[in-house]
Image: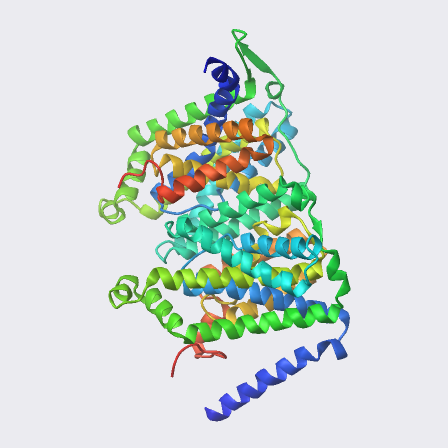
Length: 291
Length: 313
């Protein structure tokens, strides 16, 4: 038993840390899913778009990728606001398919725009922390970058929590998601509020994009991979709950690395998908959804 | 009205004759274009049957593209079975797999169904990439297909395209189609009136999977080469969604017009693959915002223009 634990301590720790990264990838999608009731099929591509924005900023100003967040987050917020305001709001309330398909179209547009500008080459946001590992009391070696991702995820989720609790905007978003009609009667312009919610969600995608960029290589077509991760996190964590989403990320990360440990590295993604399918089978609307 | 109807009949016959005799008077380039048009038509008609008539937005049609293509490759290369038999087996394997996953996948609704089907396809993509028997990510060479002439493949593809239209037309005019329309209009009311919703949708799902698998086999006769990343790639579904949306979702003529536009645009911009997808994406969003029913749906609504009506008069 002890030897098994000793053998598994690596995959478990790294899985949990990777799960933190997955949490931040999923949080924006979870928000939009909960608030606008829209499955943003372009979420993965927004994450990758942010990675490329960071790459450009990093090269232009020759700074560390972490500092590019100053530009990436506001830029992503503006893109998200515009997308929701001009493209998604007009099709809301026209049934399930039109918004889904607009988002799908956006996904294709982002992917091919990136392909056109940046070619299909794999890129990475190289920084000195990408290659360092730290040793915990000689017991465990952890890649430093996983720790940074995890910390970034926790900070972002804590900030979002405060935003929803304390600010007018946060309360208005919650009101609009709880009861659109009543919120409108109270003088909230719900359509504009949705656009702000999308802006915040794509802002978190900005953080996720930088985290993904410093941790893994990326190319224009990696978006869908992160969309499925984000969706997995949302399914495992339940709708609209910030901490549930974080927890979903941890479960998915753990499932992937344990799967890779037992079945071989080729099966890391597969074991994540299998867990997702199993959960969908037995709880078709997610693990922690309140009924 | 009667004159118009007979005129329409003659028109259809004339177009069919032109297409069947195409290899004897047109250049190989045009034959290839109509070949691709027919395959896209058959595949998008199957997606249309799911999304347009059964309310099942599947993002996982590539599951059956991959299974059908790999069945063709495996059975014709490893077992030396005749090509046509391998293609039919591909359709059966697809339908069988669809029935296997139907129990869990039909518990998911709406968006969950969409992502669930996509996740299945992604899982298969990774499985096939790590599977020695099918040559890992390098894929397989469908060598036996070299024995076929280009014209044979063309006629098979054309036949598949036409058959898909006829199939959907008669399906919709059958009892099943009546049930589907009742479900589309009012799901709960139709169930109380005795429409077996689960069975209607399952039938469509299985038919769509089987035909998609077989048509994929015909595609890989022409393509010769199959790899997990392209066979199980989401690009397939993207293409089918765009064809159907632009042409008109939930109409039989929609996929015909959509496939034509798709192949035309694709050839026009064949030197710039990402530009053609970019333009398709922009057109698709424009269509959803301006005319959500697509070209055919809007024509029907505004002018009452229909070529093939599934409605009973």
